[in-house]
Length: 245
Length: 245
Image: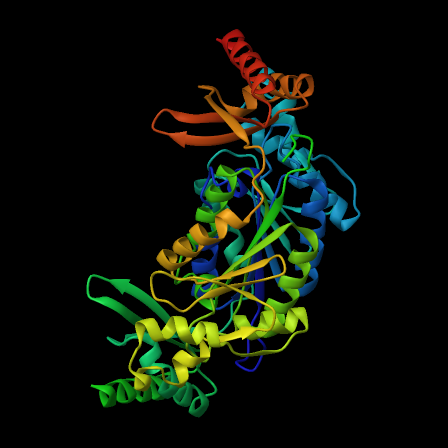
């Protein structure tokens, strides 16, 4: 991929009432954020929606139209509240049925036909035209339809699926970053930091206040795909901070 | 509030590149989810967007049209990348300027006029028509405009603001919940659990697989605002699980 190509973009869609109720704290979106940053893809949006067909369809259609890739987590299990696969089929306007490839995968875990019951057979329903995403943990696959990657909500399974999906993505030029602890209050560096940002437009400079035992402090984070530009901006921040002391 | 009123709904909008890059793991949305569940308000959607004016404006306008309340976190500090207040003003089509009430609050922390510099004065810019949300931690206020509550991103400050905002919200009938550890694989309970759900339509029954040292297991969570209906559904789940053993 030439350096001049615009970077690929992505969104994460977390599906599940249990995250919205606060009962489960979502860690999947943070994991995917780290994963994508590592391979140079810009995560642009995260959404969490309920186990509700219309909410899923509307979110999937909004996100797949806006970004290069969409990653969903949750709602592909065997129970009545798992409606992600049907909702994705509806979003794409395609049919859905039991997929022999998915059945074969589940048979590896459940060779006894009696164990491949109605609930587990729900997990073999795959939208027409989708490619399967292997699940080395518990066999029931995820799938890819168009630019949408549908993965499990259980973190260990989602991570295993992400390792399958990763090589299918077009990697970008990796975003580089530098972090500087300002040892100053954010309000005391805001104006000179804005001047540094203005002088270094190719570097995104963020400022993140925090509190510790010593009181208010600030982390300055610089991000760029250009190592030289990043180094120059960091030197300017260091110089600005030294001037305040 | 009569029991027959539809429950209030809410969305959380997290604003910040640092969450999308994975550098910062968002804990604010989970905290607000717990807080709202506690007072009977249904959180319906969470979004995370970048420090980008158009992204913020579009998300705020979509969310405030869909839900009773919107809570934003992040982007109200003193630096150039803090563009939430201006974006909220733009979303509502109102002006924004230095607000004397906000200046008075900041003066409590910075009585010396030299400390109330250009950066800190940015934090006193409030959209026209907004009510301020006090900040007992670091004084720079959040604000409420229409049904949108704009809060800080630093967790301790956001939590202090939520304690100010909470009493302004119309509380609902609290959602009650019961959790049952199935000691069974999700695929083995899916069909009988669907039957229980069908027989108890007033209770939302969710099924959450997990793995521990003993292997695959499942938590069943039942939620309802009606204590009797909840107890009846829980008894049915317990009976169903006992029948499997």
